[in-house]
Length: 169
Image 1 (cartoon, rainbow, N blue to C red):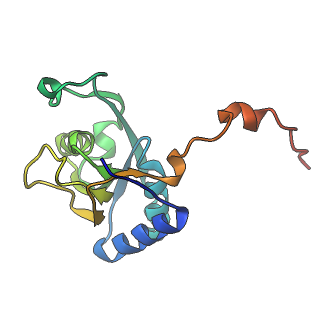
Image 2: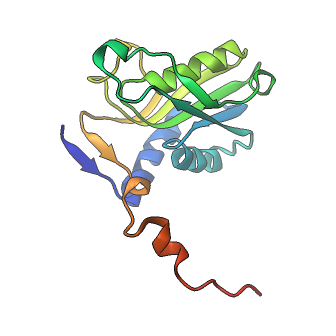
C-alpha cells in the first residue's frame, strides 16, 4: 500500500478544507482516541465547540477476514445522558475500514444523539460499509496516511523525561 507522510502544514490544509463543509452548529463533539484527538481539538477551536467528550474503542488483536465485523470493546465512552438530543460531530483522523467511527456513531444514536461523522481522510476502497461513508471529509485517498503526531520520536518519552527539569517561577 502506498504511504503518505503528512506535515503539520498538510494537516492545516485538511482542516481548512473541512471547515466550509461544517455548516450549522454542533451541540457536542466526540473525539475518537487516539487519532481524533488532534483534529478534534483543532476543529473544536475553529467551530467554538466547547462540549467535548472522548470515545476509546478497541477491536480484537490479530483480526482476520472472518473477524472484521467483530464486536468492539468500548474502553471509554460518555454516559448516554451526555449525548442524548445533541447534534454531535464525531471526529477521527481517517476512515479506513470504517469500523471504529461506525461503532461510535451507533453508540451516539443509541444514546439519543444525532451523530455526523467527520474524518480528515476517507479511503472508500478499504471501507467495509459499501456506499456508507463519513458525513464530512477533507480528502479521498488510497494511501496509508501517517500524520505528524504519529511519527516515532527517538528515545520515546525517555528522551523527553531524561532532560533537565525546567525551573518554574
